[in-house]
Image (cartoon, rainbow, N blue to C red; front, side, top):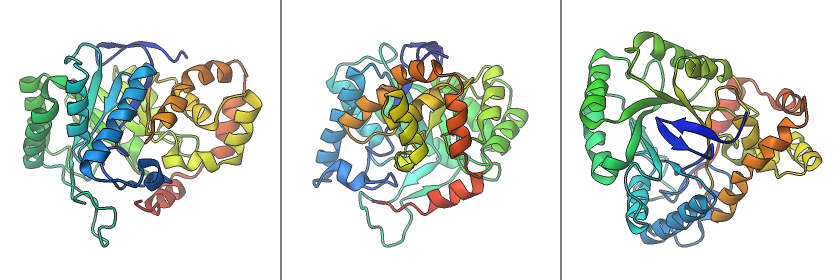
Length: 328
């Protein structure tokens, strides 16, 4: 595998690392040390300026794929204002993916008093509402619009939702994708490709990392059917940095632990784009070093397989642990 690829969503993409905005559009998220990474001032204006600085750092390192969502606070608005300020034209230099299906309900609070930070609804009505919201902010920039955390029982495979999705694809010219979460990622993906019209989805985004590897085979099957693949949470919300096995191998290979973790995902045979979830410019710059770390990793036969064997977790245990991460 190479860290470069010829295209994604039919567009040239020269570095297979993107930037996800889950940690940048709102003051609270579950990444370890998120509070410290954002700094003391968490006003909307300060968060927007901080997001822009991270986007600048990503762009300077060659990242051109940016992934937002309706539920990532003001991520779409922050990305839109950055694109405008930097005079980046639609469909020319960047690739934008976003998501519908969750609504942001935390109102820029970190402590919500036990109330959810986001609420899920995979209905045709919510799709219609959120398409308009995304279009107002990012309309011409959107390359792929994704169902956020699709599960078999979430309703996205209902006939009215599939029909509404097909209408969005036809009327907006947006490609469609689905993102996956939880222990049933592989089953959800395979079921979606069996039951949805064969030309409806052109992209899948899934969680894969050195701990949670269960969706790998299903992603390869999807890529062989022509779908583009995006990997999210390759750092397991920062938990991979606590792995002695990752740290030791990174030292042995002369790379940083974060770059090694992302390189392991870049090496998947489905040839994915791997999202950085960084919340600082320094971290996103370090994450892009996964491009060179991949070459180092591949020059040591058996190293990746050894690390994956050492780190692999039971999916239920992984997702149970993730569910316990505190918003901060």
